[in-house]
Length: 273
Image (cartoon, rainbow, N blue to C red):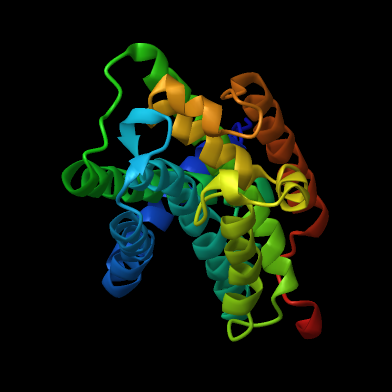
């Protein structure tokens, strides 16, 4: 008489379970939660107050609202790229990843768990930023379904791309001490060159050309298209929102991020092998 061996849970199921565990662990670290959520919101408030003036050529919008809409991209990048990248460096350094390797958690399940964590924390972070933008800068939330559909696919593609790129970039940091510099440097540079911290119409052409190869410029442009009047599209480089190109670029970065993760992800630090 033989007994059937129970089938192992699928990678997706393990990944979702891992994601639930990640979310619970994350929200137990209250100081990390507060500062992660506070940083993009504080920067939004500062920029909005400094540039609180009418948007030239668009009577129904202000410059502060332009920054508020674009800052959603920074909120996603801060949560998905920086926080996740630094978290993986810590997991690798303290042996968490090494211990997980001896469990049914595969690399794919681990990646799914991180995406779940980012999705939850990003929704909370973006909700806080939008609430502040509505209360302080009179940003109007969309009233038509089409814009919310655009917001949804923008969020999904942005979260996946930034999370995968953050996981891949975590391999560049040799320790938790170097991780903040490694993860923050590209993010800080891209905020200025992509028109998030500076109005995109004031940027040099060469800088815009370089920024167009990276996802942040397209994320900011996409979220501006959701929350600003259609007339504000004239302020963009191409004079239109370019939703098709935004979707194409972000999808390409999702695929590139996945390829980089599969090529570079490791369970232990090379120095410990």
